[in-house]
Length: 364
Image (cartoon, one colour):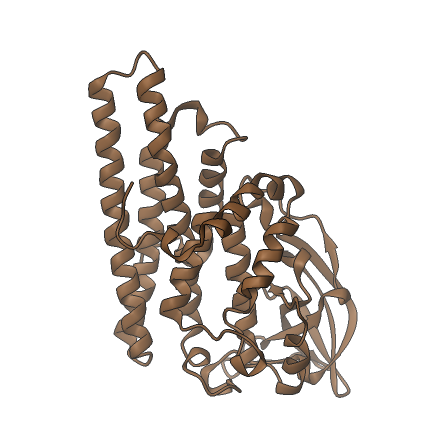
């Protein structure tokens, strides 16, 4: 099925072949396949948002969301891992430069992390002692470093912020200092390896702590002063869009197979399926166009609150349209879509699992 600006335009055919040929194996091993990882390292996809001064790509957001959509079109789990890990690499714009230099010097650098503030960091001398448990972090098995959120505590208990609430700060630690636990028990995104981890009585120097705020950016670049909320919403929505486009592509041969091999499907039924696919393509096309336009406009004027609000709304709308289009087409795919061994089913499971992310659940 032909679309304007199809995600495949950004993917070399051999990249897509490597990613998809190993997608089932990655799901079976519950983490990205070594061949997929090698491609990620070759193309520096984990470094998409890392500062250029440290060897990163420092990719502008309008270009980034199209790359991430294309990667998730190739495979949802791979696209998600790249998005979340490169997103953690964005923190390089806020991390102490001396520490950041050593982190990003690693040839296979990969930052994974969790946004949940389920740890504590007790002020200890010139640093902190960290304890906590985190439920999941996509790509953690491939990580060289992990980012975590902790409530800061002192000798008198929790440290409070200006609003009187517990002060939460992010930290970056070496992957070897966390103990991993099997934690991902969901139907989709299985190959993301989004497992749990624990940190016990770990002392870190104060330079491991940083702050995510435009005023705290240590790299003079638009990328690190663009609001984190809209950056997160846009990159996650791009993933759902890519998965939905993959599903729509797979519907073409699935519908053809049903039309020619199922006796109870007549010409009127075929017309219904074809119309549903055409409508889904049009809806996705419009939602994607609105989304990319909103991201581009906000990138040019990142201080305009109305434009940023449009990014939030168009991201949620794209997620909603992606879910609804896929669900409209799913019943026409037959048992192929219900078999956990098929690509159709894997894409469906991945999209419906990823779409549960809290940032994209409600259309505000």
